[in-house]
Length: 361
Image 1 (tube, helix red, strand yellow):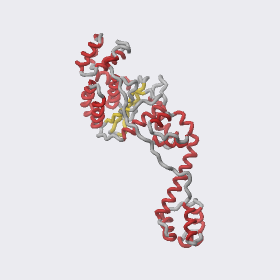
Image 2 (cartoon, helix red, strand yellow):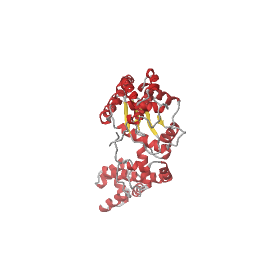
Image 3 (cartoon, one colour):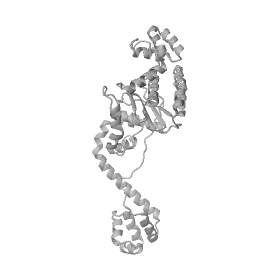
């Protein structure tokens, strides 16, 4: 139910010579001095010397002048300049990032390596650069603003979830969602789809219903992604808007019980339908805010309508549960989960009617 990517591997040379050194070699081969080159190009001798030393850049205009006077194409000179300036910028970036190396201790680096998001065996600095690319930020300060503060604010303080793990899990879902084609959001279409999604709960084989679920939700503007939980995140699911007309529902299969999966799916869809597009909703183990309670109620009543709730107290055997679930058209494991959650049944009872889901690549 999840797709594992591979990290991007690019060779970055440790040393890139300034184009001025190539220029010195070229004019020497032609028996030309810097002063003569200055005269031929119309540039000052000082300007030529600054190019040689890597102080002055080779602009497109200068590259054309050098093409005329040396016979080496302007494109070559421009490419040499670009490569050198990029290399210098990378060195400057590395120097700035050195101060952020302790940030790595706050992130699930080993899991990101195992999942293929960060290169294995890289130096700490290379890993830090990889982390920035993974999160789509330039540095730690940007990560704090884009990922840390929003996730820390939205996760419960009652349990020790780690913002770094939460942010990493959310980012993986965001990247996977970007690869899924999705129609513009259709509120009416999603409402109409809910009974069909509910009916999927009775199918015990995820390989049959999962592609259908993902495809049907995408047709109404909701991307559904299942991504294994990252240690320390303690999240069941999350909902957020990637654009004004594309919503993302992300599920972790935490604990892997089927009843929790289906409840979490409809809980997150409740956020999509009921709450602001500006907010991110993280369903962690300690979430009890007003909007979370509204999403809980939405999922509960969708799976077991309010009119049928009174009958829950009359269910004393697994046979009762199966018959009740059949009448409602839902999986019996969902009913067991509700009974356990409300304390009507102990968590050790009725689990043979529930499924355990696993991720496949």
